[in-house]
Image (tube, rainbow, N blue to C red; front, side, top):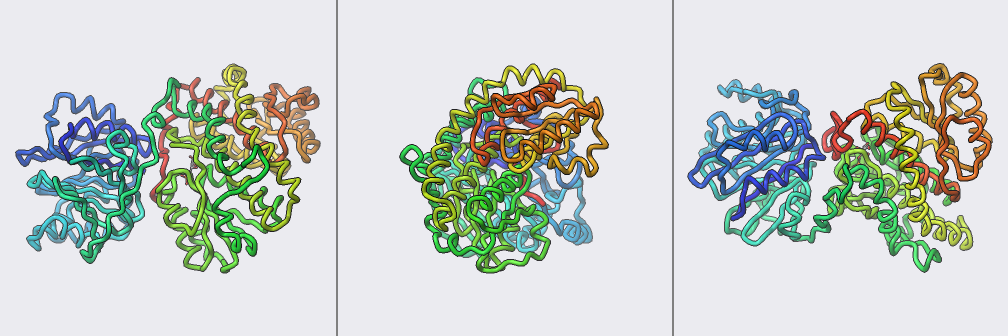
Length: 614
Ligand code: F6R
């Protein structure tokens, strides 16, 4: 949540900051701002409510000359989205400006204490408190900015990635992080800052991932310096950014979401590359084979995640239970972290996160580690916090997901869980070599079957017109299709703002069936699987109550075709692979309904891609 950018160098500071903010807009987009330090020792702060394009329009007539700067795109936590609460915030004497991603939990205590010393506050934000604190310490101690930042951060409880600039110093940016991401790009005579590497990918691939409680001193013409809160210098490790600019563009699609839906045949190919080998002869997920003893002797697996990743985890549970006969629990990371969980050193905790930065999932990892569990991460963003905090893990390798509603990451996560379950089944001997080979040979075909499913695009676009103005939706599925129902409902509500409920189909008769009438469409996920006959009865129950039905069925289905109002036929695959196929038409349905309603599917209201606050 919130994106921060910084730049010091010989380039056009303002242009670099604005294009960086646009890349980070997926992290929050209720307001945006820049702080620019000019050579003459002038600090200009420009900020506006709304998207980065509003900021650009606002700055069109301003003096944006600068030799360094910091910028921010906001997802509000403290104080409503408005010009005044937008970042950067500045100190009362106007000498310091700050951008911040995270939350200062003890801001009220700090604010009261500063107010007693005569500080005045002009915004409702926790961030203004931090910059005032830095200023106060600097003035009281007559010290350098770096010393004031260090002392201030010692007093702060919470999460932050910050960048601070000083009116009187056109040669320095101070940045720091704790529990919020911060990446520094090292260019040729120029240095970049970002919440991730996307703002500067075209300028440099040399990146430094700042660690928790590290402060970065970025000075013009000097090498980057990192110190801890005791001013002890730490080694600067330069990594290579694995990102290309084409991955950050829409590639001819009107929205990132549609691009990402259509990319799935390719992203699934990337996901299985090198892991399912010899045309489906073997499956080998490296993270499993480098931890053979852990997975062989595991007592129980607990999966922690949020949102769409939690839905993928429910499928992970089913896959691991079915293939490996290991007891698996799935927890919302936000609940797990406060649930005083009982964990032993024979448990494995799997943390699943597209962004690798979700605050609740990171906190769950800390708890699991503190209780002695081996923690395995499944992430998409290379170099993000979760892969670095976990004992081992694997990437889903689906490339940057920019649309706020997750699509290709979901199918990638499910695919990784499938390969993980097969790898562990091999180790534990719970599936025969023949069975593993059989599944693996299907896995390699999944990308082409997803491609085939995408051919439903036009049909779904037409169908969406019929349902655009429905006010509620029900999504039902059983077994492997139940998490797909949850995910389908989540996609619809996120981007179209239509209320949608996902339920296990058989639960319907215990309450939700009361909602069914001619104005409540139901989407039923009913591929040919071992629960097919059961779901046919559920379809009949809805039909006899006047409900209209859109059914996702296996090609050639005749029974549900007779009952449902609309059917979308998808290719046949083994039951455990159906979610990857059946989720695709649901992604398209949500997309088109939202588009018909004129919604911004890539930046839905109130949401942000990377949830780095609690
Ligand atoms: C839904 C969505 C969110 C995320 C959730 C977890 O489309 O994107 O529900 O799945 O915020 O995010 P990650 O996977 O980054 O931990």
